[in-house]
Length: 361
Image (cartoon, rainbow, N blue to C red; front, side, top):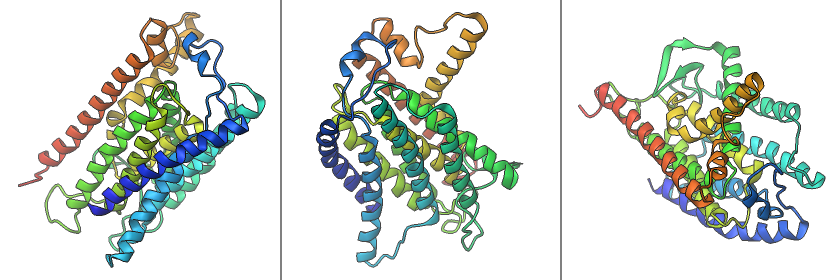
């Protein structure tokens, strides 16, 4: 537990202290956000606000994770970084790099479009394939790998197996879907950062619970077969702390935006944690807000192309309420509440499954 607290605390402090430095540097360099012309009127005043703040989240996340392990080494515990933890962090960092290139191109071209769809898809594909191949390697003494080629809800569904090639395809779809879902959510001050902090906090609890009831430690019917649950809890705690620290400067009125650098990285964390903890379908519930945002965009496009009419005033979904007259802060707070409800409901399903299989008996 101490390792988890250290990771969260260090990441939060680094994020709080580093972000204002990035604000000054990016402001001097003219790294300001471009705003969609068709967006809500109130957003046009945000043009020029520094972006690419996701750099602070990624650095803080690695700092929290690394410091936690350094302290463990000094204290003689000997808990070293694991394949699962490092792979999830590398997935997030790789997608963050794709997002950084996207943000940088937007800034240089002074428009709200960065990498084209093909380039972004290729970037996500390369990172996802690398993660998928490596995640099925590095078996431990129980022959557990960081990820499994079985579909999972709260644990592996053994009758639904993708196989090696199928898992690579599934991994790309999951990585692409989650990174885009978080990216769609990142349209209001602090919305994606606050929601991501809730999701990561939920995964701190889930991963630590899996560690406490690991089949190699506890002989019970409801035990969990996850390769490195404690290290994944440390990763989730570091990410949560980094999001909270960044939110200090990103909450309305935002002094800096995370940009695609942050949103794609956080989407990668969501995808990686879901696969490494064997909770791929449960993540749909826990990250329900991200799902709603992505579905709103898909529905808007599909209905407009078939009927030439719009289902919402504007997609993603949060802009619909802004154009309906809601204040931006009202939308943010109510969507945070929705994110919190989804996270708690997902955590409830996780615990209910543990009880149903005989946990605590």
